[in-house]
Image (tube, rainbow, N blue to C red; front, side, top):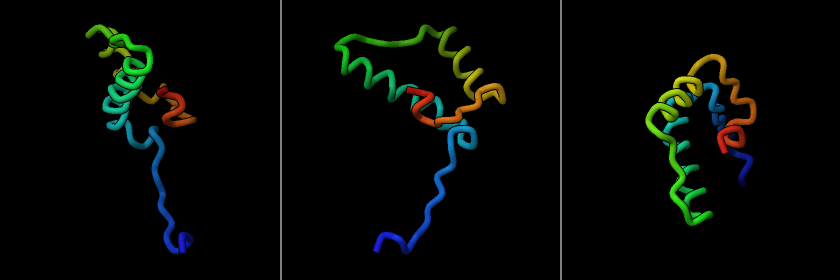
Amino acid sequence: RIDLWTFRLPGLAERREDVEPNLAYELEQISARDGTNVTFNKEARQRFLAFAVSPDAAWAANFRDLS
């Protein structure tokens, strides 16, 4: 029976520490799919991650927003 347990998986808004490893995963997936190396330069990565963990980042759709 599947309905015996209920799991609550918090969204990215509640798990900001998961943004960076998932960003790395998404970049790896795009690189593999497109056959090219997709990266951020150091400054762009730092700025994106600073925004991503700030209150300004709503992350309404969770990982769909990240990918």
